[in-house]
Length: 483
Image (tube, rainbow, N blue to C red; front, side, top):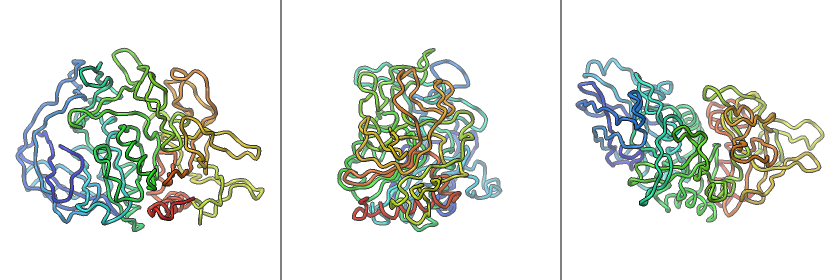
């Protein structure tokens, strides 16, 4: 599509290549359930081959250029409420289309699907919470596969690197105008959005590109939500969120691996370039990866993500194997149980002489990827944040899961951190997934794990659900966001 967000009443342009003579598009909205909203007119199908990959492998296709598929226009109704919407392409004539049942929540993931955001005509009127869909990260992982063919072309498999110059940044280049189907939306976003609506939270939505382009986007909102896997950020995104917090606005990072790579939108914001450690020819890892946020120049950006979130993937880790992978189910060890975040949970921190409770115990809360704050234990065995890497002070660690043992291998990060010896030979301290909060104008809550919205959205742990409600209830109103 031309753009992944549209204001209600505007024209949405889908780009489709199909060998079907005709097709139509069914539109759904993600909410308490997957709701059917409309069906398009009949469109005539047209096939266009994808652009070839520079490596010359026939099965591959270039992730670096726009695919320029045939455009199809649909005017969105003005009465459509804000939300994340699903477009499902149904090939064939009217009779065959009637035989295709409407989708339910189990059918969100798959090919012949695309999602987009509908933004309100009057921002902030419906609610003061803005949910940011991490679309740059989605594109970084989109392999442009189809039902019939695994192309495996993105930033991770068969990337395309440019040396830069003449106003172009150096790095791996990725077009936002490529097909690929829906995966991450079904895993992280759909269950959490359904839970938000079941609980009555009034939420509006945006994409990364919306936040990148509009410095006033956050003005009508008290709380910004980052959900799931939110790895790729532009400088403008960071600046706009930092200004929001400085001005008393709040952020809840129900996410991890957050703000790890910087991106440079190019070509009228239809593509981005990022100098990552991903393969360049036979070189892997490609170093220095100058768009890594935390290292000082010339090896990185020199603006650690800790200064915004309070934590970093540098101090956390990930689990290998099939995504999302199996992993420990011990949960976060609770600290400071009297904090408002834990109100109504009944959880203890061990200050009564007993064993501290664990938030999310029995669920795969920690991971698939997780972030951590730099920390050290005090004389009472409480993990205290160490102000480093630009971390805000004071950052209060409310939950901790120590990543032990740490596997130091770059190619097999089983329990460990992403701060591998190839980047930083000298260890800088213990690694742990951490959950915490800090206030610097507004208040920032960081869950420190990608799968927080999964555990909450599916209501797998009562404590996680209550903590989420405490965060939303307090931070959705600036006046009550003090600690």
